Picture 1 (cartoon, rainbow, N blue to C red):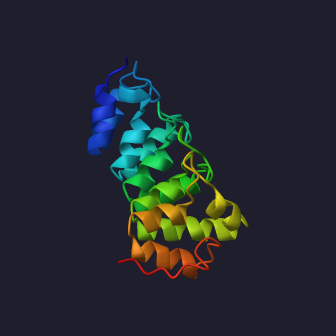
Picture 2 (cartoon, helix red, strand yellow):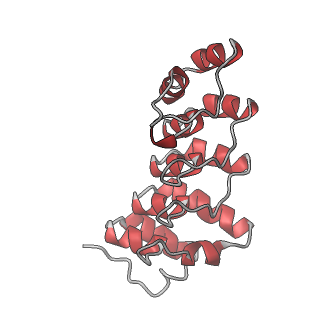
Length: 178
């Protein structure tokens, strides 16, 4: 099983200078798998290190490369609640509807984690792309929508936002969480 390399560690820590040193010295593949098949880009996204993300993408890191669980860099940024990294990855062409092995989208993971501003960004992007209803109605392997996950997690602010921004699953909900 692969283990994290120096590049993975540098990306995780947001050390752009070290990332450049390792890749420009030659012999280091920016897409080399580490622990759980995570790439340096996954590590940078999970830490909101936008400079490192930009650099790795410029060196050929695929924006939607999945790790062992099917998570892309976008999933890691959304799970961690990193608005800047999420926005950058979407701007760089990351797939809005990409699913993990358990059928979760980055949007549903952000809702499940109570990441209000990241959820708002996904809703705005989906509205602009005319995919809002499809994104909101997408279910994971447990047949749960993003709204279901937010409600179960008692993330009242996310539930309210979903309702305000047109999630059809939230329209009839009272959005009161005790």
